[in-house]
Image 1 (cartoon, rainbow, N blue to C red):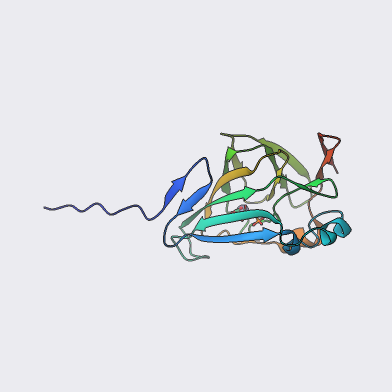
Image 2: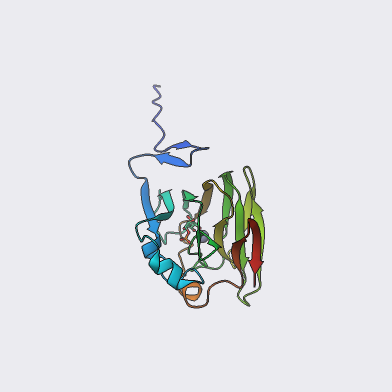
Length: 187
Ligand code: S6P
Ligand code: ZN
C-alpha cells in the first residue's frame, strides 16, 4: 500500500508570532479603530489614527459556530500608551460562555485581564512561556506593559463566538497605566 504525506496546511514561526498558509487570515487594529477603548478619548482621537496597536493572524479549519472545531491564532500588541494607558486589545466575552481558551506567551511582557459577569476583575502576568487558561465565563483582554511587542498564541473552540458588546459599553473593572515608568493598575 502506498502512503502519501501531505504538507502541513500552516507553518508557524513561534518566536516571531507569524503564521503562513493559504487559509491564514489577518486583521490589524489601528488607533483610529479603537474609539472608546482607552480612558482618555481626547488623547486617542488626537493621536495618529494609522498607528497599528495590534494585529491578529488566525486559522479557522472549521466553520465559525460549528461545534467540535478549534481555531488557532497569534496576536502581536505593539508597545505604546494613549494618555498614559498601555496599548491593549478590545477584549471580549465568548458568546458561548461554556467555551474556554488558551493563551501562551511567545515574547514580551504584559497582563492578561480577566473579568467575570459581576465585573470582578483580576490579572495574570504574561511573560515568555507563560500559559493561561481562560474559563469560558470570563472576559479577556491583553495589555502590553513592556517596551517591546507582546506576542501570544491562542487556541479556542470554533463555536466560542464573540461578545464585544458589554465590553464596548462598560469596559473592564480596571485599567493599566504607565506611571513614571512603573505599572499602575487602577480600578
Ligand atoms: C479569540 C482570541 C484572540 C483575540 C485577539 C484580539 O477568541 O481571544 O484571537 O481575538 O487577541 O483580541 P480582541 O479582544 O480584539 O478580539
Ligand atoms: Zn477569546
